[in-house]
Length: 327
Ligand code: UDP
Ligand code: MG
Image (cartoon, rainbow, N blue to C red; front, side):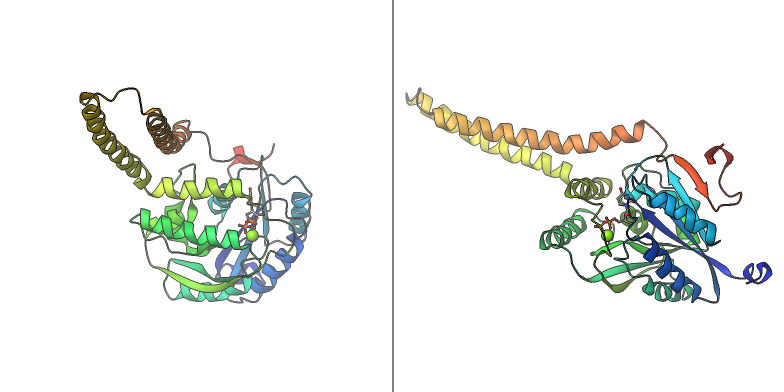
């Protein structure tokens, strides 16, 4: 393809966060290339973000980059987490549309042409809706499903259910997303928050190609809390309602204690005191914990550290600022 010809074509950026994915990286590259090469009327770039992999993923990515001019590699200085890796990719992607996809091919690249079709029809965001999820544990399916439903009932922003980060975004949606610099990120919610014309595209989520999930339960819980705390203050309200309720019960009990005292019963009631003490202690700690989740995030924001640090980049011409480039 000549450069004159390509300059008339719209550019599609595919952003792929990768963390210790040496087993899948070649298949991922090949499948994406096959799909993207098939789209004659578009030019494309594959923006891989190496999120501080400890295996040879980055080395392999750089090798691939040297053989294919569509490939760009951003190596972050350490592991910053999936949502931040995706953000780094979105920040540097230069396309008229940007697609986010996982490296483990759970999101089939073959759906991309349909996403592009919807974008051509004028949609700004085309998000994949997981119709069926193959090969994931029942516990994961149950917790994921419960989480999306709780989140939906807690927030008044329309965050669609069973939707991951696999999506296409128009350049105007991307430029709005880039302005949202919050640190504890829940990207799928941020994209819903932006608005514009959005549409879901059902697809079947496959099994991970190889290797293990990079989202252990610890990270999933942090991610779920990020989703809830950044889009809802219902937990804070629950904490105060819990406070009102226990105060009311305590007050009623106080009246009963007072009456008993007047009637001459005094010493008895050790068990009752213990129960009340433990109950109140528990409720108080839960409420402090809820407040703590929010305060921790406020603390993160106030430090105003950069969200991520780039170590090296490969395959970009002059689009990245000099200070981010290696010496
Ligand atoms: N990932 C990442 N940084 C992390 C964890 C994951 O860049 O700290 C990438 C990972 O390589 C994959 C995507 O994010 O491309 C989704 O991760 P994974 O498939 O392990 O999550 P799951 O599908 O099990 O929820
Ligand atoms: Mg996966």
